Length: 598
Image 1 (cartoon, one colour):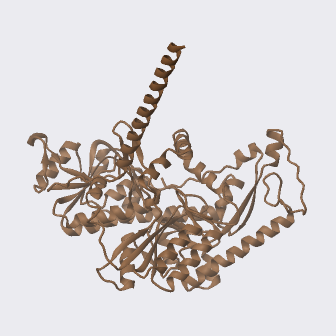
Image 2 (cartoon, rainbow, N blue to C red):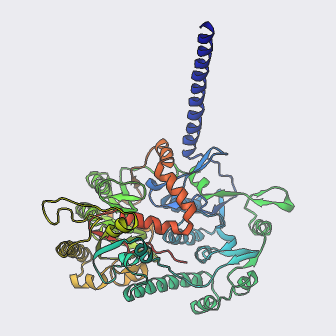
Image 3 (cartoon, rainbow, N blue to C red):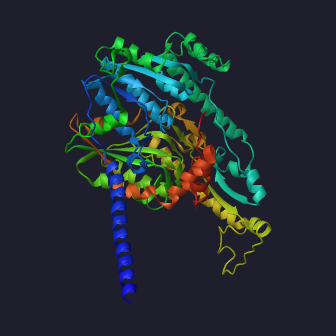
């Protein structure tokens, strides 16, 4: 018995010690990762070149930062916000330590087309400081080349690739799959262009939707071509279009001969040329193999966080509507009607806040949540200027919440409009009965007590009821836009009907007031508030603590999404859009689908 207790005691002690050690190691691991969420303060040496590479990606709202874990290096890299990127470039223009900028997009993270447009505009302003902007790449996509064309000079690897063949937009249709599964999607909508439901009930674009998509791709292509022609003089826009039509850029030598790039150089040759032409740049290494002293954009931001944040009693509130609009509280990549309304109300009641900028980057969503947000925008506008800055998309519900602002600024490539509403009710009765042998029976007090059930079709009366709800919401939507834009109901209806417009067209038809990015909207808000140079930008967000961000990265949904993204590849975004759409109920004011251009 003595031996038993000795053995048991030793085992118990070993278990306790092992558990304590495991807790300490685990705590240390998480503490290290949490600490890595806090930006370091790297030094910026004299004669440095700011490298624009977006390796950590760019997001609009700080709420939507999701880090990437590098377990080997015990680091979490976090994406920067658009505001941080813009402010960093503005600061670099006056920073004596920064000699110039190099664009390098070979290992870029995720950046939307509209964010690229805004940062490209800042690079053009940066050149007014007299400092250089050069670009180098092994591979240039079309949008990557459009961005890089803002540089004074563009260089490419002698064995590199430059893509220039025009713009396409693909729409994926799921009707065939749903038919095989026996799923019927019951649709109630208003708007001949409200094509959000088309992928679920058709196997091709309707004529109205095809016209809409053709207008979108043509407007985007015109924008890209005109920008490249302006930045790379010597060829007309028509010639740039002809190069794409004939796929003239087949080799790197073609790119040099036709003026797409200034020369074909290896990376070391690019560094040597830059050092030779700009002696103010600090060289690293031996003279015969010297490289350029560079500071990555995210490092420069981390080193200058305090310099980019000034303090004042005069504040401009920056509030984000970044993601799908949902009822209730906000979540990751979703805008809760209650949350955003509370944030706008907070800005309205704060006497130190002199103006509000609402950054809208949303495909829309719940019509009711959009109405809740719109009302707070209206109340806020009665007391102080409200400026809307549209990002990649501000469509349907995203436009709904924007329509009450004093001024709406959009990027030329913003997808906006989509003034229309719809409802969808899937009917899984046949799927359950024929595919898995399940039948559902029901007891109810009234014929429509279970209206909206996914296990039976809608009756004629129920369809009429829901159609009336859709029509009422559409009339309210159009009335709000007409009031906010000083237009008649018929004028809004003519450009509404669910049609999506690119920013360049939205300005022509009166849906937006002008072109401009986030920095332009902030400057306009300051001007409208009459506070001169004495102001502070206050971001009103619900950003979690570093430890909370870390825990969210290990959530079940986050892990599932990462696995699905790896497995589905390019199909992940359509899957995610379908999951979000089918997960919402009620009347929706949402983008037809998220259009990605190739």
